[in-house]
Amino acid sequence: MPEAALAPDAGELAGWLRAAPEAAYGAVRQAAQAGQVAAQLALAQMFMEGKGVARDPQAGLMWYSVAASNGSATAMNMAGRCHELGEGTAADPSLAAAWYRRAADAGLDWGMYNLANLLATGRGVGKDVARALALYTQAAQLGHAKSMNLLARHLEEGLETPRDPQAALAWYRRSAESGDFRGQANYASILLQQGQVRQAAGLLRQALAHGSPSFLARIVPELAASPHPQIRELVARLTT
Figure (cartoon, rainbow, N blue to C red):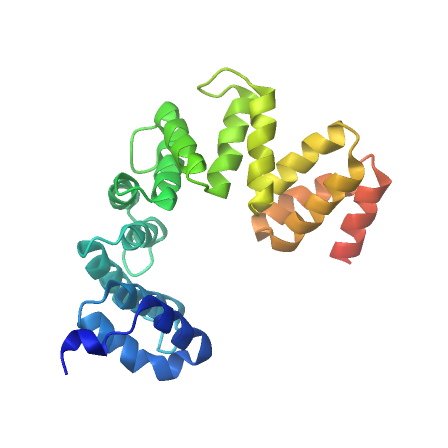
């Protein structure tokens, strides 16, 4: 039987990993070794998460690198994350930026977003807010919800672009509707200023349900002091 016949397609891989990752490990590894990029990505993630196999970030990074060498923009981005966060290797934001740039150049919205974050803060690269904005804009136009939120912030505050409150509102709305919790919170904030408390409360309920710990630590005290009783009640229900 030729090797290609042993390699499952991406849908089969996803199904195996959802159903029984421990049982899938051997088949995924075989497919990865046979050169299937989807399997290489899946195997990398299994090692990173300890899913179906003992957690091994170094092995995860190795398989991301293999998939990246086979042209996977997603693997390039994930290799960048490993170097940025120090997963499976020492943290190195300059290497992270190089991998993100490869992913961005390959057209991946997440690569654009992650590279923009480094450029906006000057981590691993020279600080370049204008270039960061261009990348956020490009990723937002591709449908990346977090980039939509950051593009809206630049437009709202006039960062490296003329202030445009209407365009900012439109991008915050798109970000919120695409599920980004920060976009939901920012769009809700504008709705509250406009007196649309009920709609804002619905968005804030979603943001509080899915927000990161650092986001919640910042926003919960702010909302608990809201002048709107409905918002204070919402926070009280969700945090007690």
